[in-house]
Image (cartoon, rainbow, N blue to C red):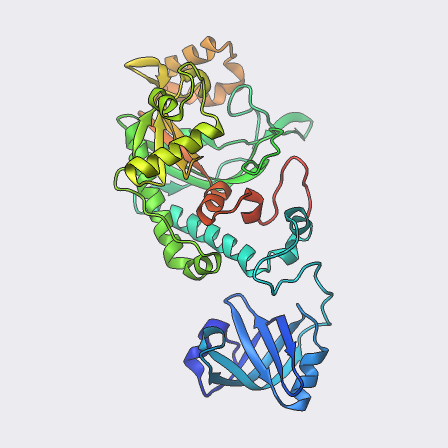
Length: 428
């Protein structure tokens, strides 16, 4: 008899079926026992009234893996509107040791550090696994949106010979006796691949050796990168980003509806035109000094509130960041060279995406590096490609964990990361 999942049971009322999963919860009454079995799709209620079946349920421990053969009966009060009766319960392994917290409760009562210490078990909780399902759907939507626009998925090295951005903190390692670094971005490679495919994207890990110990930073996270050629300026990149976000959220709603319900989350609408403000205007809106070189978290929150109040939007672009705060490959605004053709996208008052137009002329790269006192040699393999013809281009990068955390209302990105790596954590 083929195993079926909990969500498939309503189509089998009156039939004998086989389900399998983990013992999520037991309720032992005097004459009957209720067994809740959890599988990848959801929960199944099993009713054991027969003394033999009840005794079998009583011997089980929570999280023990079991197989149940039983009859499907309609019951509107049960999960999915059905339950299993007259069961035969067979353990598929030894009795499970009790987890350090109750997985059957609506929310995990353990502290986040305790959950992370026991991540392989904590992630079984429906709310924790639901966030990961949202993340998976978001990545699928990212790929689908860009595939539909003739982007090509690429895969770039994660061990590199130099840092991507001058002055950034990187993880050093030994590469057969030579110094090497974990890549903090696929930036150089995705730009170079514009010279091959014109439009490219990548989903992969990036590494930041920055000693942040905050709820919004990780030392390793998943970056959703895109780069496109033959742009007029950064606004063409912003338009593609807007459509990509809309596609991601549509796929989340379509593929992860049950997970969203578990988390009590409604997917926000992406406006047809996301409101945009220049950096100088953003400072004024946020009540920051006019000479402030960057936006602080409090400024981002103020801009998020402004976008909701004035435009009914959960998203807002901030354009024209000062060139001094952008990487050397950023294209300046021709009309205001002190400011860039770069942008950030804020989502609910938090920076989610960084992007912009890049330099595409070889001489401009030499001048940009010289202006920052940077030698060309560490970047020679990258800069040299621009001698051979590159179109005007630009791109963006979305931090997956930060996106999911903001979408589901998690207070900490570690709540939506399976096995986070940060300043303090290398295990499990």
